[in-house]
Length: 242
Image (cartoon, rainbow, N blue to C red; front, side, top):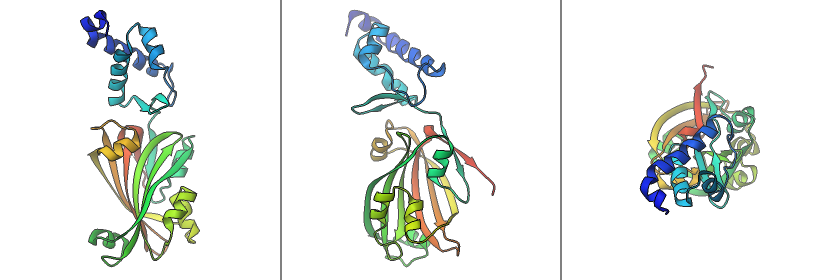
């Protein structure tokens, strides 16, 4: 650290952070765009890299930028308008916003239904379930992590199907279910834990929106129940009456 930094380090990193924030606000750095590297920023502001890192860390804590390991630091994109309605489809919502939807399987396991999961899926307590953990992205930005439970008897091998299809709608289509709808949605707020923070590229302590939902088929039979954790700074829920 230089003598200048030692004399006014806080002022310097704030100046760097403020300059980058102005660039984001005026469109110099667009949403989803990679920021210049640390060395280039340091040269622009005539500071050292430690000062730059501190500025970028503060901007990340505020949800303005996101660091991707081995790739660089990116400007967070505009919040995704995410309608909550009777037919909620992640791929359709993201695609309608002009962005590319992506799904990534984290893991699939088998477990037995707890009393609460059995109630939601209209099964007996202890019934075999398939649990699917998946990350969903818009372009390259992580939007949510979801944990989905399905009846193993009705959907054998659903984890393998999701790994290939990367869409829960396509998984259901594989089993002959062409349409389904949302029976219930409950939204709560929480603070991200360490595991989801890593998956969502969020700093510890950032807020998330937790959406618990159950989907049913045309006959009203429960198909799946999901607990999705959304990065609160990347989505805007829109309640639609339909």
